[in-house]
Length: 145
Image (cartoon, rainbow, N blue to C red; front, side, top):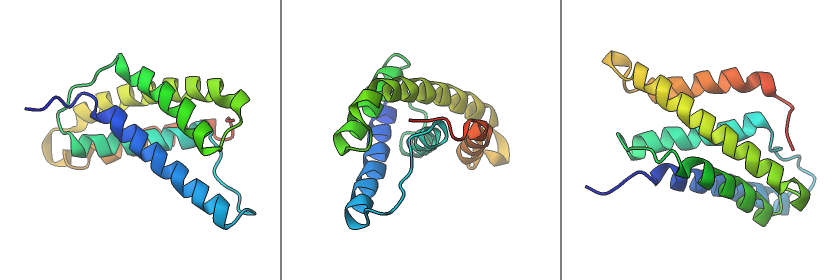
């Protein structure tokens, strides 16, 4: 069996790159369009999409809890700066924020989803867990970069 403990970090990079690619294309096509800011809610949304996709792509995969914050910090530090969506002076703060949010979201998602994954609700447990976390994070709307 292949080792799937790095799938989560790979999925996060893919989701973040897809979001940034859409933002770059939208900014090139329509410069007057107001694009998403990197605030706590949007970062959490990106992280939760990656967590749900990872659950369905690599079911039962073990997590490398040391690698998760490292890859999250690199992903949120390098990719938005390379896409030109964040000023360079905000990169360290965004990297730290993305690292903390992704690590906390991964821990909470895994914990909640493991407890809900028995019985008839097992198929919907990842989506219900992600929705619950995303709704809880709505209190932080407007805090961002």
